[in-house]
Image (cartoon, rainbow, N blue to C red; front, side):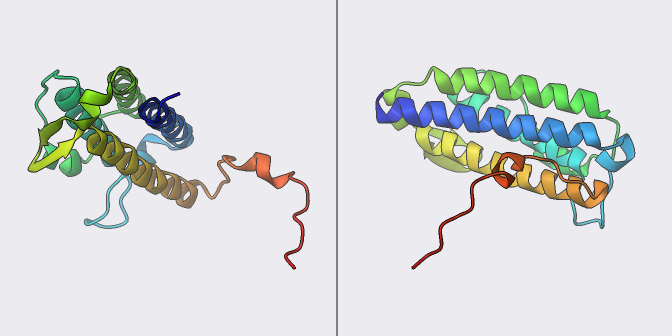
Length: 170
């Protein structure tokens, strides 16, 4: 497998893995918890879901997939409700699935071509890497918020608990 194909497959696999983890988190939260904020400068899980949908759509679907859609980034953070968890989750899932189709279909020329996104000039590779990294950061925030609100273990690494004892370092 070529390096570009490995990069694209890894990127789509990670986006889908993060999406699954977000869905697990959202399913454990009440509608009230989805919109809970500790303070005015903090984002609720609902805001992060809207923001991720907007970011992935703009950077991947609109820019790399040449499928223009308007985005109001400020509204993503200003929302204080008005969307139910199932709707937010479904919209993000559809966007991620469409983005993985776009990413999975990219070739070397598209990865090295330069694109204008927001105020940035980036290669296709930069755009994919940015989205996966950005998605990972906000997934971590959603996981942390979920653990704080539910006081529960989400079980993402349960399989490592039963591993064989590690060898001592010399």
